Length: 286
Image 1 (cartoon, helix red, strand yellow):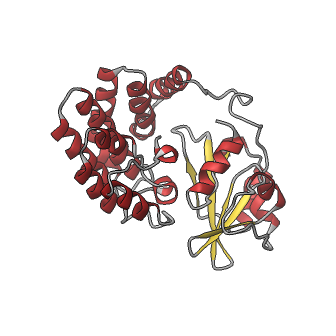
Image 2 (cartoon, rainbow, N blue to C red):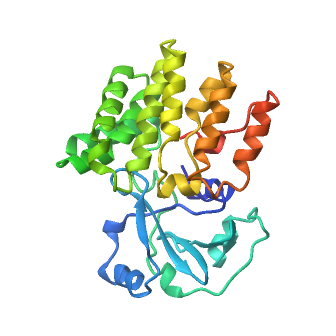
């Protein structure tokens, strides 16, 4: 997935930016610049090993979203504004119309990023992603590291048809949930484990179990990723294709409690489902 695609995806989901980067690779000076600015609330690894991160911090009454590639957005009241020219160059479709606002250079002081994942040696094909996920799982030395690695291991195993592996990883993830309720990955784990098990159930003809798993996934408290970019709609899409509209509508309602930055998407999808249409979930099929 190229950097341009990442930016486009996040713009379409309330214009919050994920940027490719690795916190561990930053120099001491780069880390200090971020810390001294007191702008960073947290950094959120998107992959289990933290190879994709974004930083979020308070700024001028809103939130600054930045990544180590010198691109940033300022988000306030559900609207996003570019805060530097680099972002504007790759985001001409930003709505509302791009606005350049004054910002503190310290927000973007951590700047390294290659053009895309392949150039950085990151996996881009399903087999490569699965191999990387399994490697991370095998390298996990603690329960917490395993907790982080199981999400991708379960999802990537399912995507390549390794059903029993996916089932095992998802069930293990569920067993670890009580130990990590305060962890940033808890909400992701609730969602991912249930969605994988639900998709397995559906593939085996157990529709009622799949519906139950979808609702359990919707009980996730959210996460840094889910709050900004929304829930994974893979199982919802699968169930819609089986004619199971009501459970999908119920799932939308459950997702409202954490996806407050949906920019009206849940309402739009709800109406489309009620009208017998199939929403375009393409940006939420993870």
